[in-house]
Image (cartoon, rainbow, N blue to C red):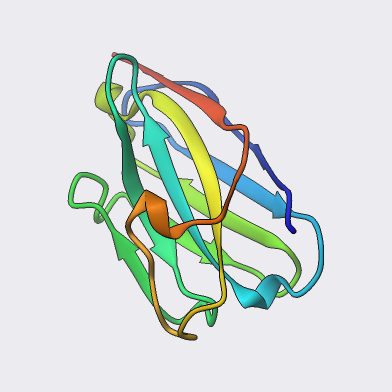
Length: 126
């Protein structure tokens, strides 16, 4: 069992930056592949980015590629650095953890994840 707590959301102007953090509780953080998803008002939840258990493999949605960077540390934290933010990035951002699986695998489907955080609101004003 793992619990995830996101932080770092807020209000920012278009072109600005935010850094989201996701802290995992429990043990063996390295056993989990991590991902970020988001849900904009009136839309379905969508994949944003994923990082493998090793940290050596990452994957991004086309809409954020080149602007967002996912990373993880050796403790229990996963980060999403978001630069050049656009109004269409406005959404609730969720951190997710996937137990086990191949060491270098990046999971992009929400159904592949076992645990979810409560989300953090990101609002980008034009």
